[in-house]
Amino acid sequence: MTTKLAPRPASVSGAQQNELLAALPRDVLESLFEHLELVQMPFGKELFEFGTAMEYVYFPTSAIVSLLYVMEDGATTEIAVVGHEGVVGVSLFEGERAMCSAVVQAAGYGYRMKAQPLRDAFARGGALPALLMRYNTALFAQMAQNAVGGRHSSIEQKLCRWLLDRLDRSPSNSLKVTQEMISIMLGVRRESITAAAGKLQDDGLITYRRGNITVLDRSGLEAYAGECYKVAKTEFDRLRVDVARC
Image 1: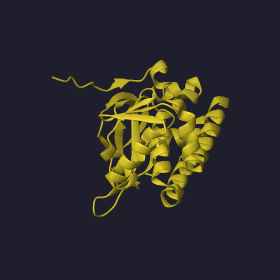
Image 2 (image 1 turned 45 degrees about the vertical axis):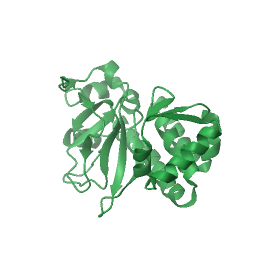
Image 3 (image 1 turned 90 degrees about the horizontal axis):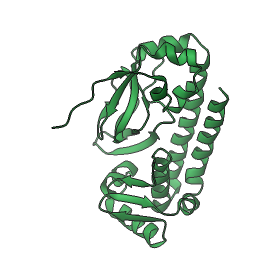
Image 4 (image 1 turned 120 degrees about the horizontal axis):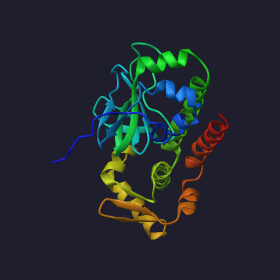
């Protein structure tokens, strides 16, 4: 029998596992404590659905979240991925509706808070709105590059970028993921992913076995992904520099 973890209050050390929260001045972070709660983020949990009201904001610490666009026929395509570097579900206007769906893709933990307290904190100005706006710029760069890559990149390049995006947000070089899941996220046929993964394995970049992909040559994977990955990565690296200056 699995015991479900009840939400717990925030702590400085815990909250600072999220890079945005860690960058806040101590007094600003502590002012959010009464609103932040540590929650489990199990695999497959839908944090919000397209068109629904944005009730909570999530700051992942060890979980990874996919932002998905869902078509009328049920087909999905991943438009961005968020981990310990970011935040999911920010809404600056009361009654704002989600423009995409958010689903936990790698189980872990994160801090959540209701949307209104974050809006109140944003309105007070200071470091918090500056960080959120800077992060939003980096997230937009990721979405834009995914859109361009989806049109002009090969299946192998898309797969490399997808793997690298998760590697940047994971504690190891191994990822638990099936080819079927990757095909759904990228909006391509499973057979195409099988062929692409086989080519990357033959080239010595990855190994794949029973739902587990291990990256053997990260630099080779980055070179293969090319601009498809580098543009968004550069923007997030700039974000980390800016965050470190706060």
